Length: 202
Picture 1 (tube, helix red, strand yellow):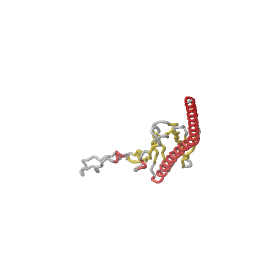
Picture 2 (cartoon, one colour):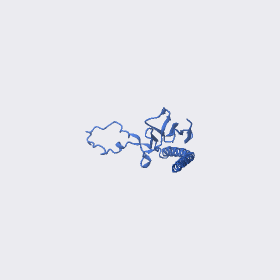
Picture 3 (cartoon, helix red, strand yellow):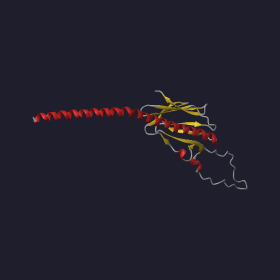
Picture 4 (cartoon, helix red, strand yellow):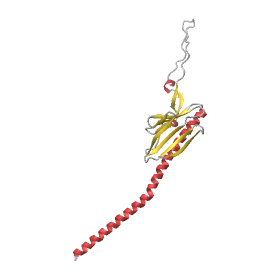
């Protein structure tokens, strides 16, 4: 008698456990239905935010080139996901060289006069002073897929988008992608003097 009651208790306990499992599966299914689309939306939002920040840096480079009359460029490290704003300026090593002043000449004509033209100041692209010249990096889930430049498609190393004194630039396409393969492109449009952000269909 007692034995039969024990078997009935075991049977009801097993049935209750099965109901619990079904409830957990139902809850997980509901969570998957609501959470996964939100994760995808969050990734897309992060991708668009990074594309917007990069587009703003490109516009800033163009505006600074026009306002200052000095060529600017956005240097992009495709492998590390970093970029920074640079301008054509005097080489920092050369500018740090101390100038002692003109040489002393013998008034009686004993010192030969140099006939060579003075050395031209060497200009090279340097980081823009202040925080604008610091490297900015894409978030960990994002990276540069590559760049379409006048020289062709580039996926590795350093590349840049240059802006002349009048703000003009060659057509360039920059592609950013996330870990799921979603991709956004930024087009530097020479004729429109603008940067267009668009989705890329793979």
